[in-house]
Amino acid sequence: MSVRASIRTAVQHVVPPAGLTRALAAQALVYNVGHGLFQAGSAVFFTQALGLSAAQVGLGLSIAAGVSLLGTVPLGGLTDRYGPRRIWIAGMVLEAALFASYPFVGGFAGFLAVVVALAAVDAATGVARQVYSINALPPAERVTAMAYQRSSLNVGFGLGAAISGLVLAADTIAAYRGMVWFIAVVLLVTAVFVRRLPRLPEVARPAQPMSRLAVLRDRPFMTVSLLSGLLTAHQTLYLMVMPLWILTHTDAPKTVIAGLVLLNTALVVLLQVRLSRGADTAPDAARASRRGALLIALFCLVLPLSGATRGTLTVVVLVAAAMLLIVAELVESAGAWGLTATLPPAAQRGAYVGAFQFGTRVQSLIAPAGLTALAVTTGGWGWYPAAAVFALIGLAIVPVVAWAGRTPRLGATAPETPVTPVTLVP
Image (tube, rainbow, N blue to C red; front, side, top):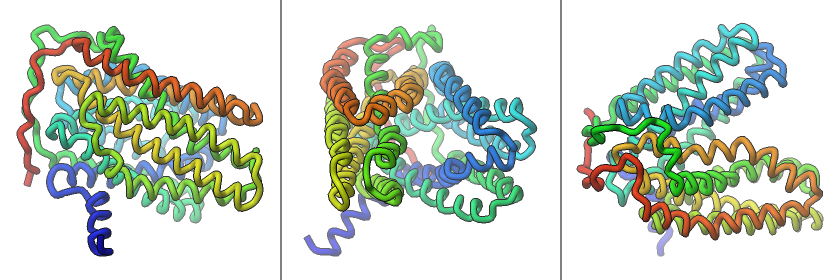
């Protein structure tokens, strides 16, 4: 293959094709500029601009995470009732208003009210965003479109993080206030992008809709949700546990941590679409999830070797472990998208997508403390039971998805009808 052909192929796996897939990726990029900016600058904003203590910030964010966990399923039902595009637009506008109000927050109570409201709105819009992509695209294009969106999200996140450097360098109250107002503007721009997306035909609803919490009784689906959600611990491993391990158990320089974060961002942008192929059906998605789980288990066996090496060899082991975890992340993400796109019934997709995110929310509550205690504070032997846990999840997820596939979904009506290609609103 010529150099020109190689470049063309690489571009095709980064730049989405024209049409709805590109429009969805564009809004993802714009949205995540604001998200990346806030993730990088929020801790300083909360403590310097709002005058909160670190303990108050941690408590408030923990309460918000609990609200997000409890509200994901009932808030997902709003998408089924009002439509994903409408909920998505309303959510972006509400988020913009909440961010714009941050500089006027006085004390912990006001901060708590804003972060809890943002958590609830984010739970609803996250479901609406995913349901819209599923409903608007043919089954064969859904996972690929989500892969393009995730690639664009990483580009936007990087741009936002770069902008945060300017804010942190200025280090003034005015700069921090300007930061959250800029994020509010980004969210409003995202709402405009979403408003230009095509309106979708109404999905037929059952004559007697199930309650918003009824999906929790679908045991096969909720088991899939839990197993798939636990696999998203690769994020915790990469961004929290591995850096702590590097700092406390290896002789690698601290700059390696930043280099590994940049490596992750670059490879997600370059490889996410390529490694998401072949996860469009539930069995294929389950196998992708299994491969992701086994790669995470292998990472847990390779990384502790860096505690016994020295110098350049340590860096080599760390990069090798990081590559395993990055590929695991890319493959597992595709599997999760495939399961989300295929298992929920069209008539109750919002409630089911919300329920699918329940497992991820559980992971975000237990994995940071659990994996840190198991892998880092034990001195290293805890990596081996962690590897066993991920291997068992990988071995279990394929038969569990098959169980879910044999079991009728609650609230399901007729089989899904083919999606008619839609065009953008001029």
